[in-house]
Length: 333
Length: 143
Image (cartoon, rainbow over all chains, first blue to last red; front, side, top):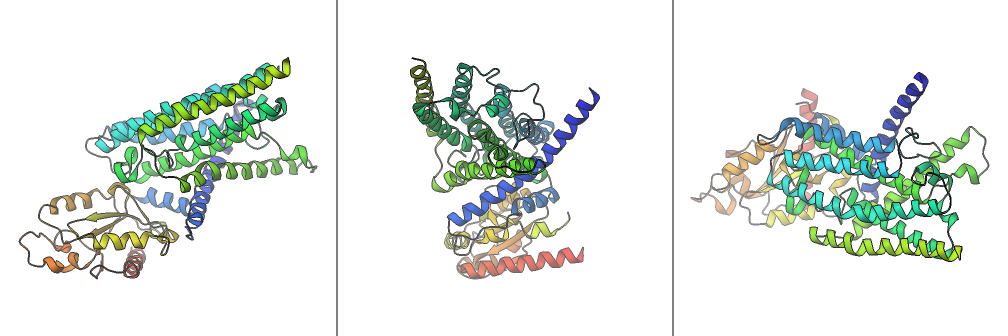
């Protein structure tokens, strides 16, 4: 019992360190890749880390209109909850640290927490810009939740009808890659679902084209407008960790393969290979979902965000779900 | 507030127009463009003075703007730097001696770096940033 607790704590500590390093790495890669696509040279890879160090040395201004305890608490809650999600997601070949208790439904609930903390922080800063930003963040959150649920339920349903026990557990998804369970029609369906999750990701991270809550040009930074110094640093870091979370979730749901199963390697090297393979997948997925979409598109208006998710993306997601179902029932008959 | 190396390598800029004719703004936007790419040195434009390290002030500070300029300056968290872009901010430029001025800028704010020109070329603005970095390094060494 005691060793279990100690092991879990050690694992959690490792995950925290790992997620922060990967978060800085992904933020840096995103900025360099974005710059290259715009025919610029771009900042060094360590730029997000430099920004963070600078922000921690800066003054932390709490506005006179703000509610100080909520204003200061929100960034901590946001970062902590973002890291907590990673404890439930398998990283590389390793099982999740809290593998006993959590499944995809819990992950979905936890995914709303950083956004809710951001909303609380925005409302508590006592600035009209931040209030408008917080309202938009809430609307965005409500908008992308449905397509996200469709994707997760489609995969869990396929696992359930294929006779996999505990279909919502990420470990059983990793043990039974969903591609192997379906026929050609289902593969098209799953590709569509993968596409839907790729489009949900920028909204989850409030990146262009769905960065309406922050909207530098109209809202001057939106929810974050009053944040400075270490609170702003924590929110920026939260965004990095959330990028890791969303990329890991996509890899866990759709590319749950391990390199060590395909390439023969000595037993000691296997975890290293798995981890490297996972990192490459995460960078690739983050590149498509964050950088590529961000560079190629302009910002949507808030009402467009809602119709994109509720109408178009929901319909596309349901079409994917129907294809997976059709594939299953044709196979049965 | 302590100055550090990471501060010099990550200057976030807030741009404030105090009654400028928009000439300087166009040149500032030209400076941010891919041709000069100041993001190489960690410099980026931000939308809120609370996020900023550098206040880029253009224009001669009209009477109506003076109070707002002071307020924006106070909203920038320490340590901070003020750069004055364009001739207007230094002397009033073509608006010199106008009844409607509270400026030039150094009557309202402590200015660290002046970039002359009407408007200054992007190269001049980049040179001004270099001067600002030199000043920061001097201050860092002195503390």
